[in-house]
Image 1 (cartoon, rainbow, N blue to C red):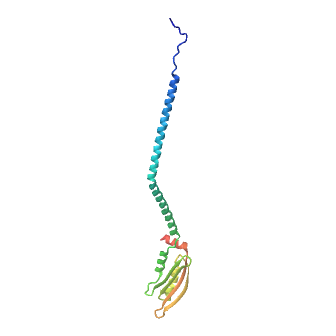
Image 2: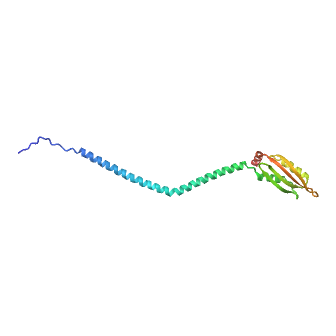
Image 3: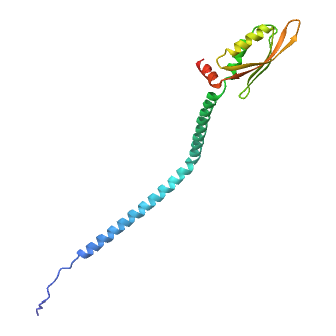
Length: 182
């Protein structure tokens, strides 16, 4: 008996199966890659947090140093500004002291300098000529605008010692120029 098969024998088509397997393998590989990257990024995130915690004291210290540095700069600027705006009182005292005549009777009773009232000076001198010379010498200073002799008191009639009280007005800009020239 012979069998005749009228149906054509077809080859099995494996392309769909290969395509499905390739797709599944691709999905597994992508899933594995995403899982690996997720784990890697999580570990890196944890490591970064640990480093941040370790470096936090250093960051705080650096912020404090920057804050102090900023304050030092600000204070330096303010100090320079104050130096520019203040009266040179040491210079003024030394200048007035150098104008006083040398004598044994010389005695400074009072030296007072303020921004509002200017210079107030009380000095013991030998004679009236010394009083006049001191008055002229103070008035001739470039930063003195006026000198007012408030009181001349004879304290020793035998030796002719006088105590004078005077007040001098000072030009702030002029004294600043004089001291900046020196």
